[in-house]
Length: 479
Image (cartoon, rainbow, N blue to C red):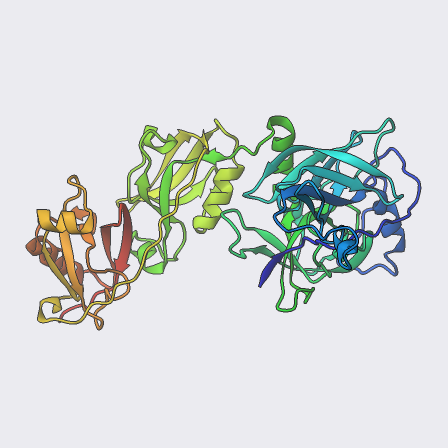
């Protein structure tokens, strides 16, 4: 079970040392991140003044009846948040850290979502009202602002790309309301995808992270913020050594955008994509499965204004290798809006480079798919194991196929053929090996030609449920 590190327990206030107006990450001797120090005492003491406990409250309508004065249970009205006006307060706890001398604080979006009042409690017990500067739900980052006459002590960001598995890390936060709690561990893994969103790229750590640690810092041994603690996987509700932090490079970038614009700004390519597995890559003449294939180009989107085509296999974007869909989503989101970007791709078996101007993302849509299993028939006795029929107007109405989509309709797929699990009833095969097919005879000729190629999969362009995709299918070579 994945849980955010957010606590709804009562707060325990802390006492701490004096506040100084300086970066607490500066001036320290650079430390070998893979050598455990004799003690974490000095590091903890130095960083504690920049870490805060976040408390929030929200006024909600209360339809629970009040216990009348004099009734035995009336003394429990405050405990349940009941008041005579029909409203009650709901609160939550989290963590945060100061990133500037003028009082900017980073925390998690889910810590402060829906709050009417936000307070930051410092290690010396001071409580300051916090103003929300900006929040980004997609990456779970929020920035707050507190005010005082003196400059605040603050911490600086680390370069999360330089972190290695096995590096020592330290978390400071407010687990279960016990503010100022310190735990240590190592970087257990990097680039973790826990299926929480499009931009998952977490640092995994075994440092104890619990409810209430959300938004708190994960420090390296130099006292720099390596990550923002945000989630745990737990069957018990407490830490089992599977904690996840937003990498500092992503968190700092989003924080800067929230401070400057009040919202996150992300690059927009304007395409739909699918991963290129090994079979697909081989159909494009590549040895290994890597990159992504363009399955749709958004009308009036950035890509539509450049020389991109459906079926292009993208290898690099702005000089960075594209391993899969998730990698491209992160790269595009990180790239400067308005930048002229070079995209290296494969088309018709040849590499080429397309340059376009990156746009700004405003919305995102995803469509689900469901699997259909078809029975075998003698009509599927061909190299693909598929029964193809001509596309009729009745078929268009039945499967919602637009008038500008042409090809052959998949009527059934043999469960013993090579297309099982890749094609399904209702698919329209538009191209085979980059050649259009309009009749079942065209499809059979393309299959026969494909069997003459030594071990190369047959690449199909398919229309399915309002979008196109590509499949590479190994077919039997006839003797």
